[in-house]
Amino acid sequence: MEKIINYLDYQFYLLQKEIKELSPSQLFEKIKANYKSLPLEIKKILENYFDRFSFWGSLHEKQNDFNEIEIKAKTLSCHIDDFVWLYNKLSDYSSKHLLFSILNNFVNYDFKNLGDSIKRVGKHYFDFDILPKCENEVFVDLGAYTGDTVLDFLNCYSIDCYNKIYCYEITPSVFEILKKNLSSYKNIVFNNKAASNENGFISVKDNLIDKSANTTICDGSAKIKSVCIDEDIKEKITIIKMDIEGDEEKALIGCKNHIKDDSPVLMISIYHNNDHYWKIPKLIYKFNKKYNFYLRNFGGELYPTEIVLYAIPKTFNKKK
Image (cartoon, rainbow, N blue to C red; front, side, top):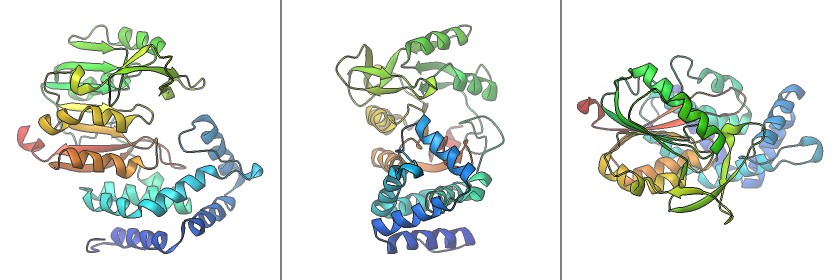
């Protein structure tokens, strides 16, 4: 830890110290005991949520299934120094408070701090304190879904804020809705492709409950192209948004040259995998050290979801 300068720093210091002092098995038992002490209605909500979205493992107390807690405890035990690294890299108090809230939720089921961290003003991804204005942008939306993020982008910054928009969406039925919803706007390129770390083909695994949570699997029977953004887009990119259900790390590798050469604003969903909280910012930092990092919470208060990492080039304000 760097020098402690406020109460939040002190809280984070105590939490990471406690995690370091426990063995993985001791941490697992602590989190499990904390979970068992929760009200029944909260446990039902969490267990149903992990059944609906399988990113974080399974959790069924009655079946003595604590896989989600086991995965979480292992991540914290093995990578607490990586979380500390991220805490020290974050550029504002709100981001540091959110990271503390996420880890304290993981260990102690702290719902209050997580709820307090929710961004309640503005649109998902578009925080005016971080991204105050946009002009002449080349915006790449990876996981464009039905065009909701693009529409928010245009509503926030005006329909004249971009030169070109690239939309990537993997689900064919959703892709048709995306094109229809954005058909009246100029200079939008629609791609029924997956962004990845290599060119090839993939298949789509449907989430039958929520089409926005469809994922990719490389089983050889695919009909959707996977592409590296470095090869698929040749012009300079100024903004990249990513919400691709756990494939963000692969897609970032496929954007490596754009990140190194263009220093685009990055808005990356990092909550689909516990390791992504530290892996993704470290990967970006490896590619380009000239970024400031921020975190924002656009999700709920029971479990960290819709957590967005912002990487803002240090020259951003000068450019604008």
